[in-house]
Length: 100
Length: 494
Image (tube, rainbow over all chains, first blue to last red; front, side, top):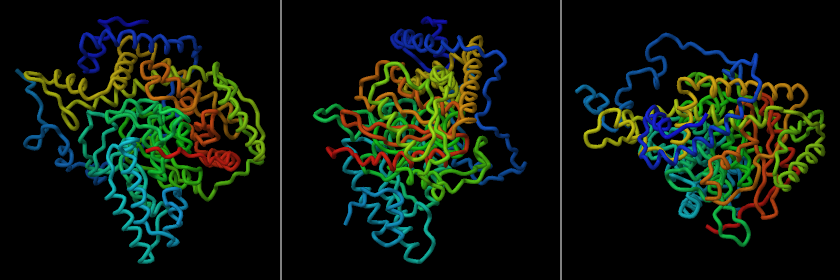
């Protein structure tokens, strides 16, 4: 499967990356080169093979159902969470107006 | 007195503990080397001499008070700028995280400080660890301290842990952290004549490590020899409840368990790693490695890993897919860069921020990842790749029924010149042809320096082990190290 300019524009939009027309044109052959190369995987017989989910057998643990069980990640850390925000206001993340 | 910066982790630690020199003297010596090399090598994004000195002061005070010293006490190290360090800018070598100052410390870096190590600074890398030459950093290329004789061409230190490899080879640090997603510890180690180990997936916590491809990312140790790697990895590894894929297992005493005796061990030589067009020098060093391991008492047999040739294309579906998901967090809202053009709405802001904040290779991988995960293509690309990944992992499992470790070259060439592969993403991706398969299977693997090519540039050999058998990997590495007697170092020009 190869991609055209319209498809690359769609991908860029899905990925929320603004690209100029010139960048778009340059990306088409680049992405097609990579996609053509990875498509060799299609020739591998994978009938009866399960997709990999974990390289090392492991189980998901449940943490104790307690608020603030871990002092670093357990909540009540508003100022630390906002410390690197480009526009923190009144204890919230500031964003451009969403509703007209 | 010997130049302290020629010493490794064990020698520095023991020298400090025994009073041969103080930890302050060590920190000052490495701080001076870091500062003197910065303009030429660009190995660090931020230097933190005050952090190295503060840790040294603590170590000296503890020693004076007769308190116990940690396994890395008095050893200043470089920290790859992918590890969150509280109060010290952490960028992943990207513009989008420029100025980001973490409010917390990554588990791995905290463990190293707890072991007594100090921080010389944050090391440069390929942007978001995506690259094999350290040419994708927003903060400029890292220049390898190595040169071809009679040539001034700037060589690649490898990537993505290129700041780490360059710093260790140039004696700016005795050791450094690295991270390895598809070879980012092993390939740079091979390019610069140092050692580096990626442990089994899940040994080192990923908490506080900027995520690239979460099912592959694994932190590891880089240093000048196998023993130093073992000491450092032992300090870094261990269960962390804050990482859902962290292995809840005790950390073995790898350093105490080191042995260069390979008697009774079987080493596998995967025949599929003899790729077309491999330079004869790479083949020769591989043969030499086989001879060394036989000399150490090992039995050597050929094995087959039939799906090897599909590892790279598998990786270049899975890694970009995970990256496109992980990097969705950089949206200009919570941290990092925000680009808000006049009159822009929220969606415009996301797109403008990400366009301005990500480099070309990062964008390329996000785009590939977005495409292979998109509706209608998910099964053809992503599910197919995860199935092939299962087959690659099964190949290894089958080989390990017969052998204890595998021996391969680390990279298909010695270090190339900067700029040589930069216009051809596929040529660059091929650098990782020997390292990616072990990453896909989550196996421990290390690179050790084995010799020099005809141009005087280092070549590395890779050892791949069974899951959780870092000891077997380190021991085979030690057996090679003892016989290779690799002492070459770059001639100082910086």
